[in-house]
Length: 83
Image 1 (spheres, rainbow, N blue to C red):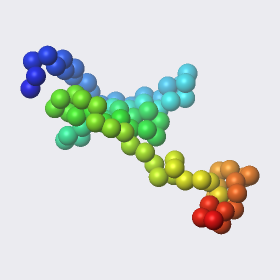
Image 2 (cartoon, rainbow, N blue to C red; image 1 turned 180 degrees about the vertical axis):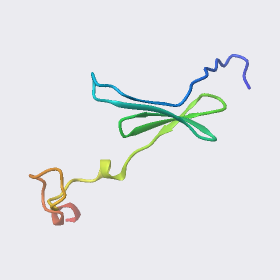
Image 3 (cartoon, rainbow, N blue to C red; image 1 turned 90 degrees about the vertical axis):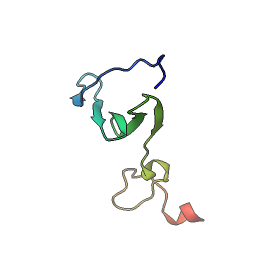
Image 4 (tube, rainbow, N blue to C red; image 1 turned 30 degrees about the horizontal axis):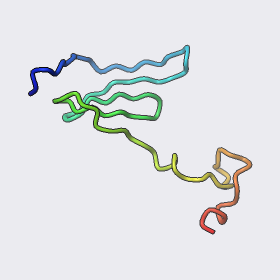
């Protein structure tokens, strides 16, 4: 381990920020410290503390379509997506 690295001890917690509406959480796994803000998760290497990446949901990259469960009532029909 590099002697220039400063490590901080942090405990898991969950917090619903009523002012901003954000849901914030810190979780620990075997390899990672995970910081969650709403649906986004930021991973930090537990041993080094270095940022290792983020999570994403596949739905973030899809174009909404006009299925009855769509959140966007004005969304185009799904047949237009693949055309």
